[in-house]
Length: 196
Image (tube, rainbow, N blue to C red; front, side, top):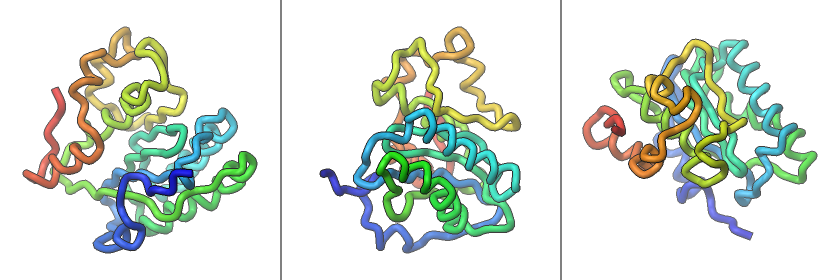
């Protein structure tokens, strides 16, 4: 079994420097334990989306977009004013625990987050989340990923450039940065570089 954490960071080091700021925007990733696949099973995927929507309706977060991958999830959201970042993730994992348990799965301890400064655009992060299943080869470019979730109030620009209004362009996959590259680009100059 692969016991590595998703992405490669030590659990104790994850908490160091973590800041929870109401009204801040976060790009968050968390994984199934041992990166076990199964999160995209229809009942689990639908349940995870329902939990996000409930947190959004309760104004605990303002969801921008998210995707459910087989062994991890990515979510882009603005933190509300009632719960801390850790409480949001803990509540999500708690409310979805039964879903995963039915498939003999559980969440990996902790999570990975990047707080976006106010001047950083959400666009490259949303595009990364959207492209993730295509980049992983989980579906052809002329199919839609069922685990993609988009808020009605958030309209990333790249969606206006999709092929046939639904599908990514093949060249997008070649020039899309990895999550680490995307975060590094923000850290280097204080703003996101928008992929062409």
